[in-house]
Length: 207
Image 1 (cartoon, rainbow, N blue to C red):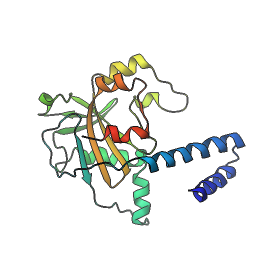
Image 2 (image 1 turned 30 degrees about the vertical axis):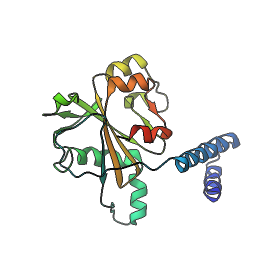
Image 3 (image 1 turned 180 degrees about the vertical axis):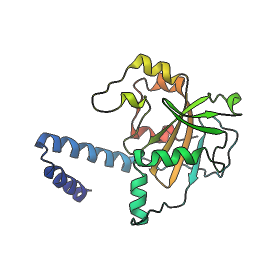
Image 4 (image 1 turned 90 degrees about the vertical axis):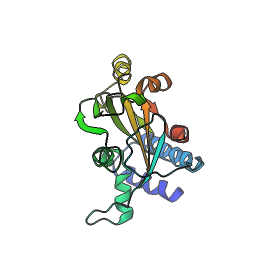
């Protein structure tokens, strides 16, 4: 762990960051690593698709085949796919395929990724948005409220969220993934700022 932090500190120094920035980034990385080490392993029940009857708050665990990419080793490809941005589009397409959740219809619209067919009686709403859970946790506010120069608008966010079902996909142990469907209205009551920290992983992805 200490050697990794030293290597990252050296890389930060090459970016001409001021010492306070280097210290802050190094401390954050150390805290994240410590938090992950202290997490108890998830109790997983691996399932096989297709899954037609989607249940809210039920964890669906899948063991995917190791990813491959030209020029990358398996470990390097896995590292890439543990990044939420890199993994987003492949997962969006995969989860609505005939082998996983075929009642999801891929839309890729502003504010949501899917609509549904045949599952509304389960409490799943007509629009669904996929968010990836990584070692940094998860943010489920609209993307227009995430990033430098952008800010959370609680009123608009809550109004948006209550009309959605969120799909959270835990990719921290990719290619072992865990998927859960959560009601947006319930989520904003528990997480009004739209942020879920990594230490809540076991609570979030447990049946």
